[in-house]
Image 1 (cartoon, rainbow, N blue to C red):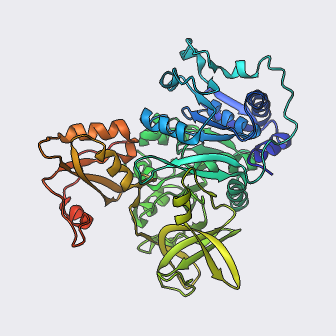
Image 2 (image 1 turned 60 degrees about the vertical axis):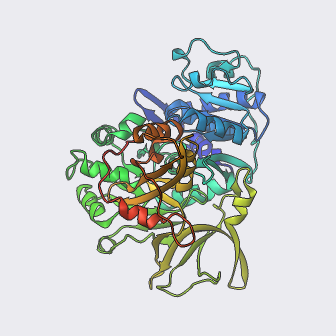
Image 3 (image 1 turned 135 degrees about the vertical axis):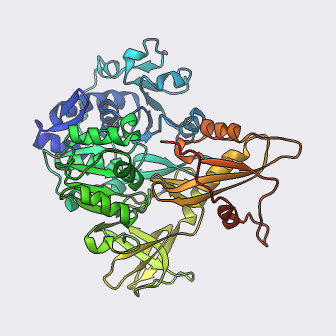
Length: 526
């Protein structure tokens, strides 16, 4: 079984059920299946099995259909944030060695000269009538190609289904490879753990280059639910999001805590306003008990689940949040999901199996990614083998720390490196520092994260200019906005004559953090 099969089997079983709905566009499973099969045949005629297809398009029904067509054709899709700087998107294209690119009306102009690609597909051609010779529309892809429908899968379980790019310490994004086997391990758990069914309306809140939509799309498709993508503008404004949830009668919502906190604090949400919402899932960062309790109080009888897992594994623990959890200082991250083993190890690498002792969280199971694209050394650094119960367990080292309690529930205790979460996105502080260091006037950089009740963390930058150079803080922020996704841009950058150092000569980040006591003047949305 491959990832596309969860959609294909549902399309055969309930073809009249509504599969996708966004604005005025709706497709039943049968209609979507026919479109996907035609697109997949056109793709398969032009691209070999396993070829990579970048998808640099806004969230839409057409974009999701194209993702499914890639899977059906045995191709690997690479979703790219259309709002990220062009240089970052260009790096991803080079790093992932894609042979084809999917664009829309917003992004097609950015790639007008990308003639080294075999194929460009413009899924919103009306706004781009002057297409380069290499470009074609979906209708041109499917028309007159003489292709017979694909009779069988062109991929195997251990082939890549998609590659998700995340923040990397070198200043460039890092591609996390996800196989069909990896994705299906999570999808099968999600389909079994939650009672989605035809008639459910599942919002797609997170961007498609994030890992949360894997649940929204493929678990929904496995259960015959309706997928309802939320456009990027609506996501940014809590009141608009509230209106969407009400008008679309959303029954399942999966989002990061910072977005849910904004919905609570910056919209007119009142008790009973979302009567259709019966299932609320959150992941990506911690949700503080006080705002979570306030949100739950407004959500009628919705069940709420805390899901935990890095992008390299997707979800590996889950917890239904109950009143007794809200009374604790931090919400636990729960129990391991099926087909997954969680180990805690101490500094000597020994497994911790007693309650209360802190250790690094390791994951073993089918959902663990084979590694980072083109980065074998980094992949090796995150892998180890654990001896337990007379067996050797290959594991992924999360870099997160936790402890078991007496009931076998896992509690999250934070990280011990430069990876942090902000607004649900994982950010390597080294990535931000590397970007600032590329500025010609900068000699030294330190970036720190300060906890924030709504955003989990906010980023603050500190720079030392080169001798004889002057830098303007607003210009440095503009530099960051031109080179980083919005969620990675520091909310404030301070120019210093020198940065504090530890006795070993390293930047004293705690001292930098303590020096940043005033609130941020502005927080970018994104």
